[in-house]
Amino acid sequence: MPLPAYSGRRALCHATTVLPPQAPPAGLPPAVGSTVPPGPSGPRPATVSAVFWVALAQVVCSLLGAAVLAMFLLAVDTGSGEGVAAAALLLGVTVVVDACWLGLAWMVRGGSEVARVTLAVLTAIGALVALAFCVVAWAVVVPLVGLALQSAVLVLLFAPATNAWFAGR
Image 1 (cartoon, helix red, strand yellow):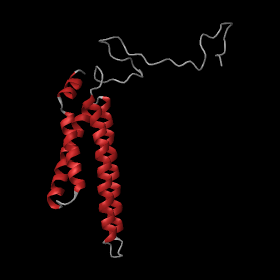
Image 2 (image 1 turned 135 degrees about the vertical axis):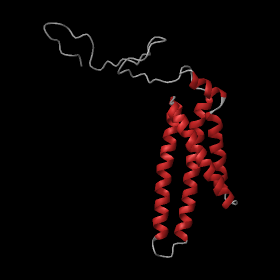
Image 3 (image 1 turned 120 degrees about the vertical axis):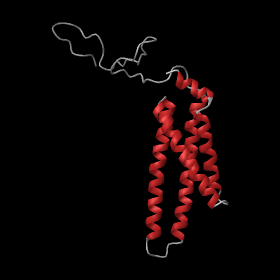
Image 4 (image 1 turned 180 degrees about the vertical axis):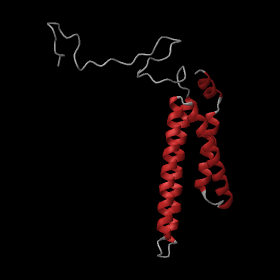
């Protein structure tokens, strides 16, 4: 539908015209209200994309481990309801933490240096927790897989290609 014409002038465009986002010329900052997101220059290296996919695998592993532990808590519940409350709390905290962790990985994929450092610190803490759980319950495979995935995230976050991409900001 064309725009209404005022004062005898014709409309110059249709209301459905959508302009694609355009990046500013090299060396200039994006315009205020620009739809082009700021980020590191150059194409995203495979290591940065791999951070997101390994983080997604870690989230799946974490949810699987929490579900197994919750089933164990429900199995040993004596009818007092404490096992149900503990399982609900465990699953709730796991979902919230995993959602935040996956969100940080998505932001790293988009080029956020703050998310990169935050994800590295939280991943290191998570790896230490997984390592402690592996020492206590050595026969459980899920913490070992989680530890391996978290170690992979830490390596990928500071790989040479990732460092070069973030340095190009």
